[in-house]
Image 1: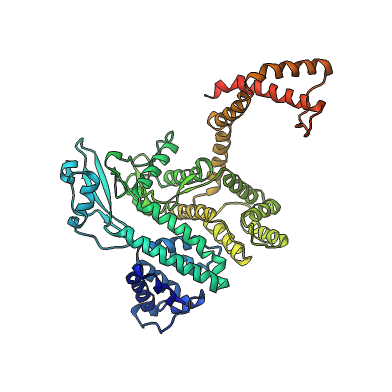
Image 2: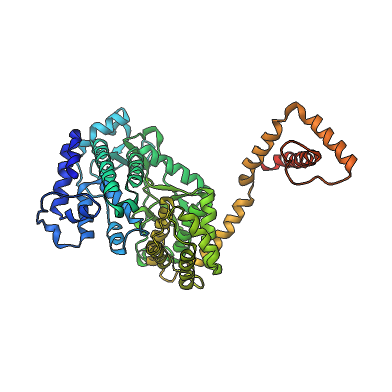
Length: 506
């Protein structure tokens, strides 16, 4: 079946590279498993001595950023994949040799409109770091501020676009040819991959993510987000504040730097829970390489290309999930799981049984998030229940941060952070910022009444005086009746109250 892909003539060179790498790592059996027959035998390369999951991970790293990103998406699918596969995909990282700066110079000069030596008072042509999409260099602004410059690799967009086209074709073939593959929703996953890659290739998206997260934490100076220098930032170039700190890789490193691991752990837990449950916008991959601990026990967020969003409805569901666990309510938990797995047609008694098992293991006492999420996703996999992708990214972010906390403060109790987060959620819901847009919307609808308002109010008052009865809270039935005016009177009175208090929220 894969031979049909050769019709994509413009991508044939890249397709041959993919065939060569998958063959060298002995992945023909994997292709056959998902319904993609592979003619010819696999070569006996160096990778075939490893397990199939490891060979797949090594092949993905060799194939570059699109395949690495695909593997990272698959790493969140513990509801579908066994722990061995997830563990391998979690180790995926973009690796690439450094390029001589002269190969990057045309991109930099086109983006800046001048040579970097003119745009900056100092520019280091030796790379600070390199990955498959970009290379990073240090520089100094003319006012003395230190910055880092992220430069997109030449030709990477064309390569990624070719990969996306080929993978979309492979996904469609797999969906038609394998029931096992269909459960993964490969075409849907390819759309998710395409969106993620196209967004990551445009560095202005990462810059906007940084600005939004900085706004979210504007009143929390202990959370630092690098400043973006927009005058030099573009699709191919990102210039941002250089931040020096200590990665939260272990407690001893923090102590040696004069930091308190317990305070850093508490801040890290509060930060990620606020991002998910209060702000609705979160760092999608808060591993130690994307975090820095700063003097004063502050935390800086780096590498903001992957940011997830949580809708208000999803936040409500997640809070219900946590409450069901903490109160030991299997029926409440089953209700949440049913909403999360719509379309899987799992019998209600099995959902309830899974909820009871999860609560029996994690429903009281100290919450070990990593163990709970592992059990939870295992239960979902066993019951063949599929979670929405946005939820999986939330769980991935939480469990990644939990792993960081375990390294710097092994006895850290997440339940206390959950309680603090619940209090902040309540504060957010009672704040003027929460109610202001709601009141504005109601006021606007009332203002639409326009010139009829005085007449309607007078009619409502006369009817109230005649009946001497409080207005009914029920909306009017179609066709009109004496109940209509009661309902209208109630609406106008309520609107008057809202309009009266609205200025206090601005």
